[in-house]
Image (cartoon, rainbow, N blue to C red; front, side):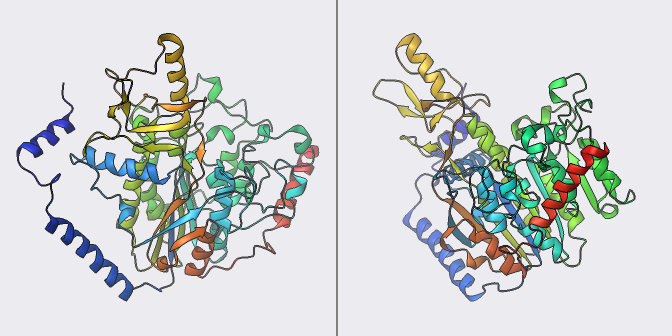
Length: 522
């Protein structure tokens, strides 16, 4: 049975459509339009102060992922795909970001998030600390704190919030509010005992203390906030999804206790989320899964129901934009990265398209003359697009035949789970997988990979920065990744205390002392 997209493609060809055979005039007109927009932009560069900043991070959204998602978006809309634009493709300013960590050529999400949120590059796995911190060593972090642009925005009187499809204590959002020598220390049970004994503070606890002025927090990660004896409200019978804290603390209750009950809400499912009235809510904590939220492709099957990324963005802006001084909002498409690690290109691309919809929603709710938009990635992945597929061919489909007579997919990975399946095929039948009768567009299909490993790795090439709004023209050429935070501060008029951090050692040291004393009180 022919796929609907193939039927559309055949109809366009037989109808004599110009999609595949545009004239020279078509291309000249297209170029002239783009040129005129560029000329106009040069005449109308926005040097306004950015009242608001909306900072989108596609975790693992490298250039190949952007291209593939763009094509898939168009194909889902009934077009060939290659000519389609994602929302950020329309932004006037584009630059490249060098992503390496201070100790790694190919980076991780913790070191990169610290760079683009604080303006200081650091080591792999380190959160909110400069390069003097030693990975995993709590004592070394005491004088290494760096301040994020979100905390700077709070100090200037702006409303702040963040939304992620990952855990709210995961590497990217954690770099907004926390300081930790290791990203894995999301709750107290994740910290080695010798580090706990000296009062090392987990990231979840820092969320409700150092991050206490963050008005909107939405994502996954209930288990990091709940004690071990607490069953999850959505998965009552599943002990693997229960709380994971050893200290007996319920940080969700503590968050609620520290807020005005008349204008603060905690929600964990879609129904509760929809009931939140932004006009009556100033503080919102939404934790929709014990761990990460669902892939967009699985979201509708969630037991308790969870909002889409664009729905969370809409609610967040409705709450934050009530502040007359403006707001800072970070939005992370966190599961793009996880899908790539699993070798699941289907989910990586669909989650990228979900972020595209979230960008469109945010753009429709804000004034571009006073809102700086940034869309970027922390790092790339080892996904590639190759072969000799005809224009309009399904991007998740096959791209031709190899010399062995077997088809191969347009998308493939340099390493990952798909490589294990290829290796198993070689062991059993002496050749790679025959994908002739395989649905390569299925959600659970592992795209082929060269090197067989359980989890696909990050890529080390530059990633793109897309920008729109006040001072967006400051993104141009090739930048070090930490440059992004400096543009945000300059465009918004935010003060920065990095180098002599005002929230520096004192805040984290106070927390450590409090934690140490608490053991004896308890």
